[in-house]
Image (cartoon, rainbow, N blue to C red; front, side, top):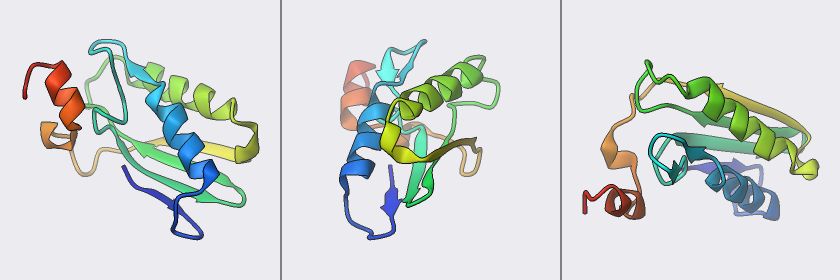
Length: 109
């Protein structure tokens, strides 16, 4: 996951965003969306935050649920300002984006 802030260094806000996104669990797999590699990027600026995430497939029936959960977790962080969660499909997700922990949890490593 890439979190970019105006200072390009980890900030308390970017760390809070990553922590909040780690609380968003894919209901089918029971693994958070960060470790699954579904979060493609996070931009933090003085006006707010924009999160780009994807699903394992465009046909994922839980996409709206996961996006809504991410939005709710971020809204709970009062210091963020405006919040935008964008669902993106390029590049397509593949298992190489998963963390080693996620692969281990799925029995792949």
